[in-house]
Image (cartoon, rainbow, N blue to C red):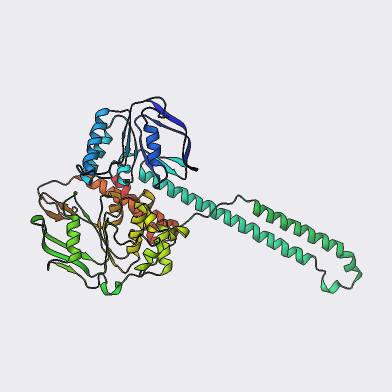
Length: 518
């Protein structure tokens, strides 16, 4: 088994040091996932390592790079990705590099790619924001952030677990530091009080000869106690300081018309046929959505998901009922709810229903703090605009969020933040996303479109072909992913409320279920 390494990898942009990596190494056959925020230098690092003529990797090995793909007029992004992948697999390169290979693929094609990569004989080094994909493929995670590369054994979920464990250790160290510091400060103060008392001659001896003779004794005693107090104070200042870990502020939102809805029916579709022009996309659609439900709508590209959403928004049929108390907020990929000439904060505030504290807390969770709030939206990247568009919707008067591919252009840090906000959201969510990890964490129910039978069905209750046998392995994998996501959520909640009995009980139950499935 070959061992590859590269040393002193440095990349600068102008005067800015993008990254400096003293050394990295990996074995042949490793599956390495590179993660990090947008702008950290992931693609730059991948290009540097994969350079066929000047790669710093030793020993030398054959290399092939599948770059980030953009759709052309002639071919879709998925078709272009597939062509690159066919060439990559044909090359049988010892080192295969892939930059966001799932970005333009639907779920079926992603699963096909996973199967091919699992059996690939060489080493894989890939960048992906698809956390489920990283869970299925990666055996090592390289986290690139703030110019440094950190290595973690295992897949993405294992990496997240290690981060949470490190955070817990930091909390423990911080609490120990604060406790010791407080003990020393109290001891110093106590000695100082005694020193002040020691300097005072008892009242009944103030005028006596004995008091005059005792003055040096009392002064000496005072000096000794004061010296002890100073020594203890010095010990307190010499303790190795431990920074307090950052914890997100809890968000308390006022949900519009919450009392009026009271878990009643928010949306109902009954025996509805969905057309696009003259083409029948879906037949006999029946859906019931109660207030507070979180439903994911899944299916291949072009199967009618967005068209169904448009039918709900326009209520163009008597078969579609929307509760009058429902206030729908629609997130779509064109981001047309933004004013590019205004600042981040002004955009969000313009349609806000929540108070200023809540608005700023939500924006901070999404990475907009201090001077970032005053940036004009027009100068932001695509991913940053997605976050502003979502924040604007999230703090509005909407009590039902319809989200059409909200994770596009987001890095993993932003995905985690968006996911946490939606998991805690008390309103109703109708979600379209190809991000399986995100869907498993947020959605409580699934409805899937089968384009062959033109039906919408619940994959957990029935299938379009009743004679077909369920794919037990896939169902097990999906259930395991859902449970691991819930376990991570509970672990995060317990760091904030360690004495919460309900969280502790559910965490133990979920952990037992995971062990039973593994």
